Image 1 (cartoon, rainbow, N blue to C red):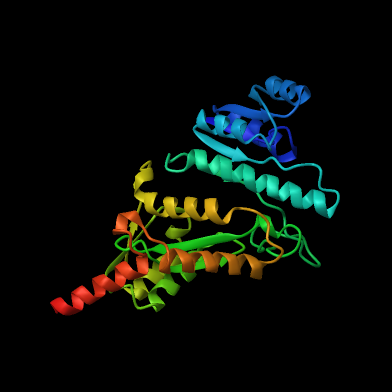
Image 2: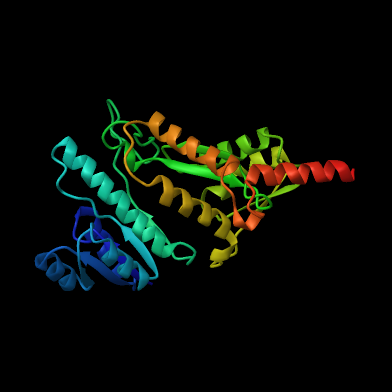
Length: 284
């Protein structure tokens, strides 16, 4: 693979670049200075001059790669204002990289901060903080969409991407009464292969469907939804988890109940679903 790496001369990035090259991959790496460019070139990578704030450069790097590893984070975070700006910069960079990769089937890998746990070393099993100064680096949203009406019928928000997040989302969708027995839940892989998720689908009498390898179109509806919410609500920083939840829930209400969709004949998703239900009731 030809991999675009940001933060390739950092503590983690230098090890990642070496590992990629050692395993036969080629690396295009963002270099913010001549010194960084020389370090990367000496290591065997191809440098791409630019900063994490140069969104056009990031898009160009992603466009010519088979995948992206985003590790860059500003070093100017010695005070609260600098940290807030660094997180906002990272969010904008990830959004730019994601927009270039959306629908392409090419992967992106990123990192987040290590949580502080009282009395012991933290591990990857510990939930990331979603409040306070670094909370903006660790929020995930999971959505369940009805492909017929485009209606969002279930969602969950959490500071992680573990299987419990997707279990919560499909359970919330089922509680609405809008998921009929023998319904099909289509997803990509990752957390959706967890045994707890499979057990939940079996309990709810929902059939599992998973994307084919390399077929990005299988997840196009969900990717389109997330691209829309990221574009409109942004990927900035909220002061706390409650504020983020409130803004996301407000956007979802507008999306379902007030937004007119051209693909639905300029009706809202909720209106489309109710019209269909009325038609089915009349036919019965």
